[in-house]
Every structure is written in structure tokens, then in C-alpha cells.
View 1 (cartoon, helix red, strand yellow):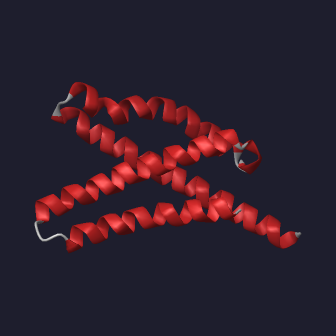
View 2 (spheres, one colour):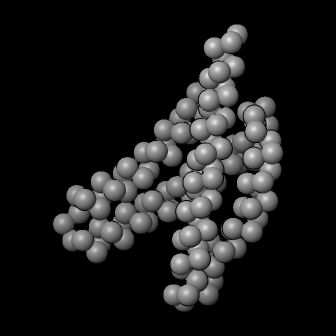
Length: 125
């Protein structure tokens, strides 16, 4: 359960840090780019790491249907999100950002639901 709480806290902290970087940086364009990099890169790295941890520790999975849907969507989303690195054109950036943002939100919702289930189960024991 501690990992679940830590997972949710980190997923909240990364966007907060990204916004703070944008606000603190004097040069608005550089700050915005750093903030976007922290937001998308940081969340992507953290959430993909969390996915690996959950795949290795199946006992934590409390919402198998939601996770199963997420895993199938991830198979479609990863090529879309990494397409700007392969095609190196501007037309692949917007779909990558939209799909990446949607996947991040979906994973956050799953994480919060699982944490609430663990917390409720711990209180009932």
C-alpha cells in the first residue's frame, strides 16, 4: 500500500514541479519547454516504471479490467507517442502529446482507484 500512495504522490508532484519550473524560469520560452519536458518526460518515465512494477507484482492489481484496457491501449499509444522521434516532423507532435496526456490521465485514475481500494481493505481488517 505504501507504493500505491507513493505512486499517486509522485504523479501529482511531477505536474506541480513542471508548473513551478515554468513560473520560476525567467525566460518564458525556455521555461515553458523545460516544464513540458518535465511534465511529459517525467510522467512518462514514472508511469511506465510503475507499469513494470505492477506487471512484476500482480498481487497489487486490484482493477484487472481497467489495467487490461490500459495495457492494450498502451500497445497502441507507445508507437504514437514515440513517433516524433522517428518521423522528426511537426505533424507527429500534436497526436503524441494528446495521446500521451490521455494515457497519463487514465493511468492516474487507475492508480487513485487502486489506492482507495487498498486503503478501504486495510481499514476493514
